[in-house]
Length: 338
Image (cartoon, rainbow, N blue to C red; front, side):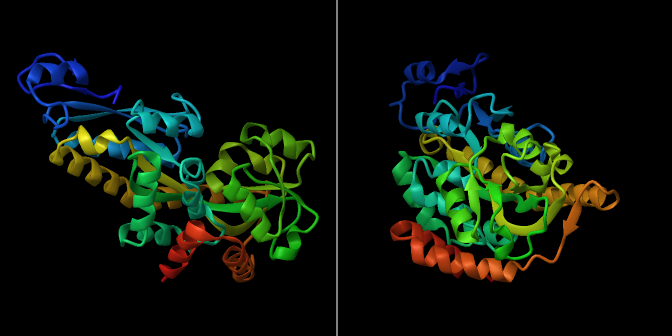
């Protein structure tokens, strides 16, 4: 773990892990119980809930446990984009990371199914899926495929909704619209399942693409729509809630080998605290955004989207088109619905 440093309890300085192992006389495989500095990376801004109620809570709770853990956060993709960072987690150069399920599919394809349209009923369903054992097989399969990367927890950073210049209330309303979806495999499957014509546009170029009519609409969580001012170039927000915007907290393989039991327990508790706080933080942020939009005339808000019709269509599509482990993950998700 290149960015972890440990110190013997009696030492006044923090030594690199390899140096300490050589000096303490240990065999190099057992945790020594010394101080550990962890790097936690993500791609969000420092005012988004993923940072304030996610990363910062993990940092605060882990350090408050007083078991020799400290956490240094790198926001705004400072340590690379999603694809680069998951590789760095595998190698141990990054200790903890917040990743969307679709990004993790680059390591283990079935993990992307967690981002399936209407795969989860709501944010609570996603959290429960990981808490009640329903995700245990997926977590183990991902760990095996990734060379030991652990999934410590998951939350929804808000549901994704459609914007366009016309209302989208039912699947037929997507016909003829060029809708921007992220270019990852699961998002493109979602577009097919929803009946949308997907166009791949980089997130950073989305505002201009909408402004110039390169695409007719897009889908994103409310916090992203607000952060990028998309209501300036879109007339209608349709509250479809068609996908939970997943965040999974992943840990490098050395989580198992270089932290002692107390440190692992403290980190697990810190992640659990962040998972518990996230729904309220996201709901508060979304309410503030919607209240602001409803009080003005920047965008028309459509509340009566036929989500039942959308969900039935996507469920039938996924059951017909997914196979193998990917289908097994999807069926586990739906079987865990309340």
